[in-house]
Amino acid sequence: MVSIKDQIVLITGASSGIGAACAKIFAEAGAKLILVARRQERLEELAQMLKGTAVHLLPLDVRDRVSVESAFSSLPADWSNVDILINNAGLSRGLNKLHEGRIQDWEEMLDTNIKGLLYCTRFLVPGMVNRGRGHVVNLGSIAGHQTYPGGNVYCASKAAVKAISEGLKQDLLGTPVRVTSVDPGLVETEFSNVRFHGDTDRAKKVYQGLTPLTPEDIADVIFFCVTRPAHVNISEILLVPTDQATATLVNRI
Ligand code: NDP
Ligand code: 8X3
Image 1 (cartoon, rainbow, N blue to C red):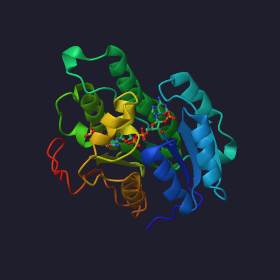
Image 2: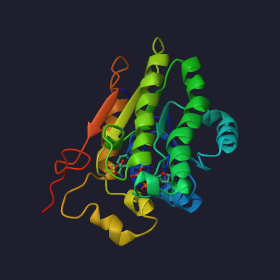
Image 3: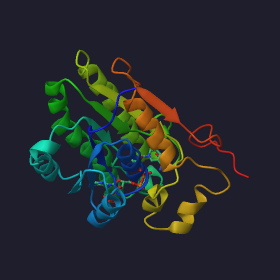
Image 4: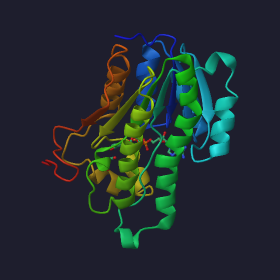
């Protein structure tokens, strides 16, 4: 098992859900954490909770290429050699039929889930290649494997993440830098609340009558992937709750 102690782990979307759970598991293992999200106060609360861990906060919007580049290139010297990039920031907006969809929602999903992930990857991976060490973990989704009604643009964004992970792995062949796509099914986080623009009752119904995955379940799998020996690359993991067979086939009581 590869030791995580003192490795620099940059997590996007660390202010909630899967990203926050990743911060906790990597903190317990002694990593140094760079935490990225838009909600600075949430990042500060998390850093407070992780007292004793070296934490550097980068409150920014991953859609803003200039601020991503400027924040990453101005990291202090003892924070600049990122070992593990967890491209987790992402969201869905709406569950409308494509021909009735809100264009603003589409742009937000595509700009965050695809372009934001690309900016972070583009700015950090060259350093990994130069240093001869590194691991990129992308949060894909079951939605990148199977399109479901109303999922259209969100599913497309996660299908793009799947293609980008595969492409990056191919382009990094011959270097020791590893690429993993972690593709969950239903995980109870703020995800559905964001998808339904704050309609918490509708969001709750997504997980009603079944046992969803928890953010900690996903963090656990990510931690497992990055701690495998250097010659092992787990390319892709699709994980679903036991109550979920496909994107749309679930067992509810
Ligand atoms: P949450 O809504 O709980 O967390 C999303 C995180 O992304 C937040 O920290 C949010 O922070 C951050 N984020 C969103 N937009 C931006 C942005 N423009 N710039 C920076 N950070 C941003 O959802 P999850 O934890 O569930 O989602 C994490 C990832 O997992 C996403 O990529 C999602 O698509 C994926 N996923 C989720 C599944 C689920 O069922 N929950 C299943 C499969 C995949 P802030 O708002 O502070 O910027
Ligand atoms: C999140 C899982 O099924 O809601 O990516 O799209 S799903």
